[in-house]
Length: 265
Image 1 (cartoon, rainbow, N blue to C red):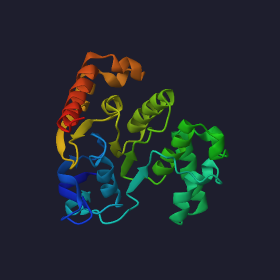
Image 2 (spheres, rainbow, N blue to C red):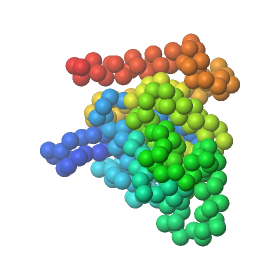
Image 3 (tube, rainbow, N blue to C red):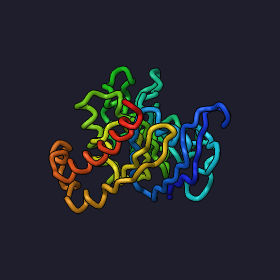
Image 4 (cartoon, helix red, strand yellow):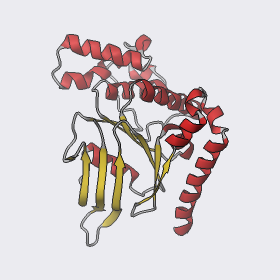
């Protein structure tokens, strides 16, 4: 479960007459347990697309659906990880992860079991009783991801989740997310400005135009990754040296550069 479909989606901020058109006829299908990254110029509507799937934004016209059901509100089948960690500073790691389960009125014994599994999944066992201020940025984002995974969502929505991290920590978290995608796959919609990150993580990369955002093209990464054996290469820096990786990165950069050039940037 967890397929996502955008069908002829338009979005205006404000009224159609006099408002700002953000999205223009978005059509995109994301399959079950597929990892799709969206890249595009600043302000093109990438995050708005994610917020529509989350149920935080309504379409002006067209439909966004998950598993064939139109999205009208947030739901437990979808979890969101933001760039800012959004952890409760007065709660421990364990308590932050447990919060969503507590809100679902799950019995404590079962909650403890699920939280323990999430701690193990994200290698947080030794930090379970620490408070957020005692953790690095990367560790705090691990907690945020664990909090999303513990709810067992079909869809994981990630809005530039590593954007606030330093370069070295970002690489570690990218490798961690690849590991998670193998051991506990979910349908993932991932928003990023980083082309290298999109190519390394995603099965497909959707490139958006400048505002009003449209899907300009969708690049198939998975078939090339599988053919070239990227999954057998443990370090991201070694993957980035591959000719196939460089070709995909260059192809996406050229497409994005065209949008900036058309905009006079």
